[in-house]
Image 1 (cartoon, helix red, strand yellow):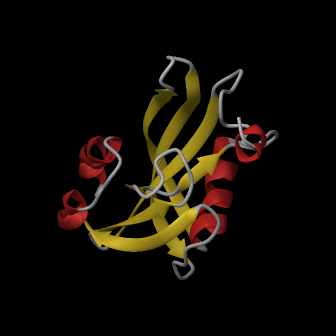
Image 2: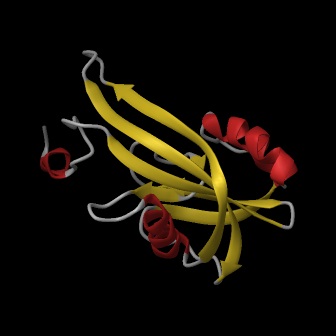
Length: 148
């Protein structure tokens, strides 16, 4: 295990970590980011991150969107809750997240990539499938369709 692995509390955790992500829709566009860290480095996903100790999931998603994309959001509803478990070659649990996915609307701020986001962009809903996206994104878009 190298030094960066030893410093990453997400790797080989003792307990699942809780993450929150927001599917943000604005005028038939969805906000997507490319991650600059593992897991899913280089993949287009919806923005979000971990819940910190003492934070509610609602506070966490607001903080993460401000830190990652420089925007504020209005949260509408929970879309999904999902486990994300990745194992290494030996079958050990390398990452384990319990993820809460929220539907939200852009409230204010100009989108700008920061922290864990290598790039951030508003993508037309009809163009999402053309990108290298996280597999769960299409399912989330289907669940959000009645509210768009």
